[in-house]
Length: 184
Image (cartoon, one colour):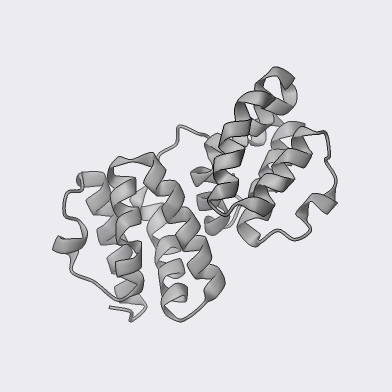
């Protein structure tokens, strides 16, 4: 996956568990029924187009028309699922932990774009925050401060309150990236 743009890597890492579950269900049909509650909850949370594509994939559809009507994040996820069906070695590692140094520039870029009024970046950031919330721990705490970062808050002590060392490191790295860009 190292050849992918950083933003794509982040999206794949956040959605790695979903991607793996869909690919597994395509290879082992008996697993498909267990995905239905996840699909319904995801649809209720606004992931209607993506879950529509997932349903089609589970029914055997594999062509490029699956991408029609999907936003960038959904396309990346669907492409990863289709690639994973063809070549399981291409799947993102669901156990990999995001490194602060690797994630910070991409997150800072999305925060910067969101703060500048980029609606697509704001939606992507909101979707990522929703996924991070479900992960718990420092990721959930990071999700909780995204809006504050977009709105210009830069008080490291307040933003890292209650976080462990890894979460604090990520937030500090994001703040450094935002400072480099003049959004401090």
